[in-house]
Image (cartoon, rainbow, N blue to C red; front, side):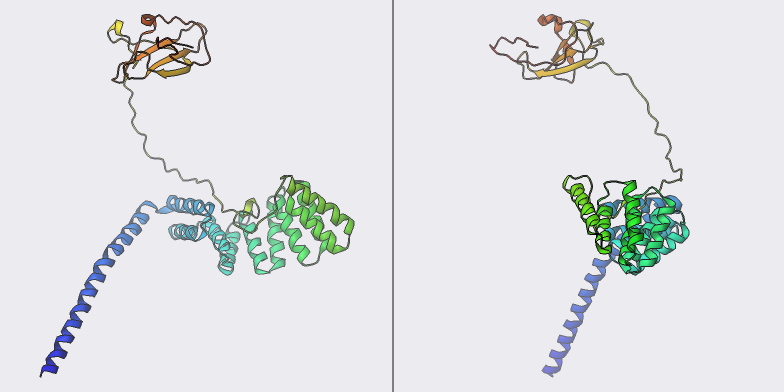
Length: 349
């Protein structure tokens, strides 16, 4: 009987522990679920339509520029959820995937973007980079040739046409492409190096040495830098695209009213009326009267003006005491310096 009771008590105790744990888990996950739902609701309410898609795309580009492609990917996906026809967001999604070396998804997104944007150099350029990384050399050449047709004065695409042709051992085509790129940009370091390698592999050692020397001059004298492997390091079109929004989403004008306020520089002699100090080219703060409040000396900027000494009244206002202390400096100046060399409270300009 005692054994049975013990077992019953143990079972009840175990169940109570499970119930308590479940309650704690529900309480802990409920705020997270509520927060997630609120965020989704906020995103849906503030980001609907093409304006919201542009906003998400802009945030994604900002994260790409911070070298955070995984975070950027989420915003590009949100842009496409908001507007599935937003082709630039699909292009940028491919760029973010490419930066994460997710080559197959990147290729799919970029192929779709290039189909939607047949005259967009960014789409074809990044598609060419994806084909290059996937080892699909012929497709890569075709993609970069699309870029040269769209932007014939862009040297970076010619470099990759040359690079991929060199991989296929088509050295004449590679040399022509590298030379075209250098004609457009004489300090294009990658094209210069690629040209040297192409001549070397073709068997022209003298030309290879010549262009290798040029490459070394370009890099050592910091006239140009070769391409890298990171995001944005493979040419201007390797960046995510930030299109100009055609959406007019301007808030209502803020009503602004101006109220004239008394000049802070108020002379004691006129009982609070304004005084025009005029333009100044220099200022010195110092406590000329020893009352613990920094006073102000202003140097006149006008040839027909006068410099002013202003006493700090301590309530946000100043009193013009120029005549009272006997300062009479006419004409313009360039600056001022103040000092009490002998403890006589004399002003030096």
